[in-house]
Length: 256
Ligand SMILES: Nc1ncnc2c1ncn2[C@@H]1O[C@H](COP(=O)(O)OP(=O)(O)O)[C@@H](O)[C@H]1O
Ligand SMILES: [Mg+2]
Image 1 (cartoon, rainbow, N blue to C red):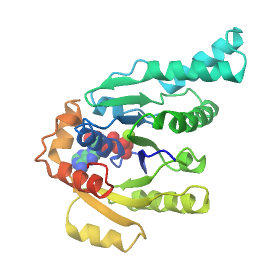
Image 2: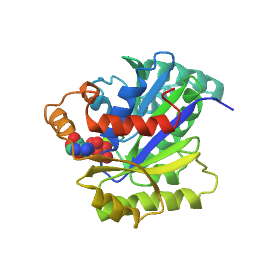
Image 3: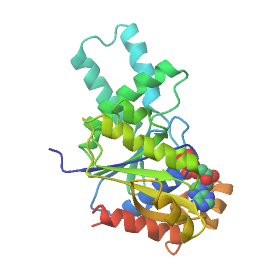
Image 4: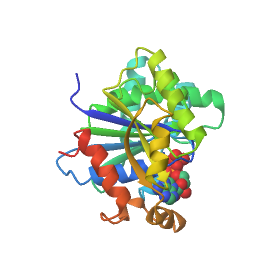
């Protein structure tokens, strides 16, 4: 068994998965003694930008290269392909301040996306072992849970805003994960984002069986940084959003 910890953030599109992921990476990256890998697993792409990293090569690029090489007869057997993949992956990792980043990229069609997801599943399995903490900014919706891309994840963190739709997607993800018995998490919970007041949190508590890990208020720093296209790693530590995220990571034992 690997002794690393894998966190994944899931939920409806636009609820704040990427923002919360970026704040988590910001805090994790401070642990100089630990090797951190951030995976941008949403084809809508965003984590790289939120972390101020420029991606030169994605998992989808690797997949395309591999197909080209196999076609050209440069790669045949499985062993060969495995080695090539290792090298390509290493090449696609963007090293930044205290963390490495890998982006899934944007496959052109649906069919490609299934294959990229299956490649991503293998990658998470192999690459994760080389890191202490892996954080996956997941795709919107339930597909990656359905396809068991998240099967090695330890902590599944659902993110939702206060909308009925957001909570409903979070509840559906739990349902799909439960049905898919082979997927087992050490913990599963909900981070509420863009909350206005405590009443909203209490109301939502009645509408989900998920434990609420924490709630982040509508935050002018996040808004402002996004407006200016600035990396969220620059958000001051005094920001309330940062302290909520810090508490969540602390209880998952990844900040020690
Ligand atoms: N707590 C917050 N306060 C204000 N704006 C936020 C907050 N969280 C996220 N946003 C904004 O909401 C939008 C969607 O957030 P994002 O993290 O990209 O969502 P997702 O990754 O789930 O699609 C972004 O413009 C982001 O700046
Ligand atoms: Mg996102």
